[in-house]
Length: 154
Image (cartoon, rainbow, N blue to C red; front, side, top):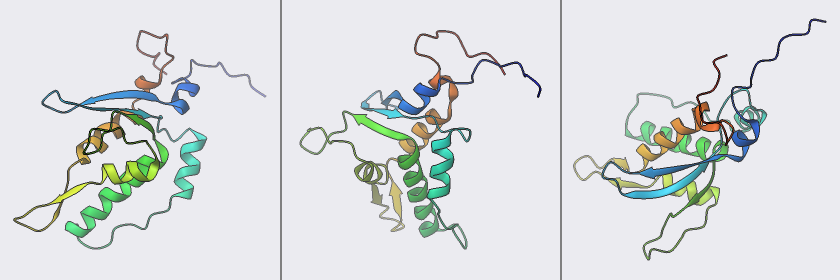
C-alpha cells in the first residue's frame, strides 16, 4: 500500500463543525445580529447525512410566484438544518432577545410581505439567507482561530 504525502487540511474540522460567528449589517450600516454558522462542505459527514435525510421534491412547472416561494422556503429549511447553529441580538417587537431554535430561525428567514401591485410574496430576508449561505460555504471562514494568513493552496 502506498503512503501518500499528507497535505495541510483545507479547514479546521473543529471550527467547521462548531461554527464561526458572522456579524451582519445591512447596506445602511444597521447591525442586524450575529449568526453562528457551520461550514457547508460535501466532504463533511454531517453535511452528507443531512443531504440524505432532507429530501425535497423538485419544483415542477414554470418558475412563477408559487414555485419561487417554495424554492426560498426549501433553501431556508436546508440552510437552517445544515448550517445555522445559533444567533445573537435577534429581537422581537419589544426589543427583547428571541432565543434561537431551528423552527424560529426558519420563520425568521422566510418572513415576507405581500407586494400590493402583484399580490405575490416578497421575502424580506432572502438577502440575509444568501449572505449567510455564502459565508457558510467559504472555507476561509473556517481556518484555525490562531491562523492569520490565507490557507495553503491544495
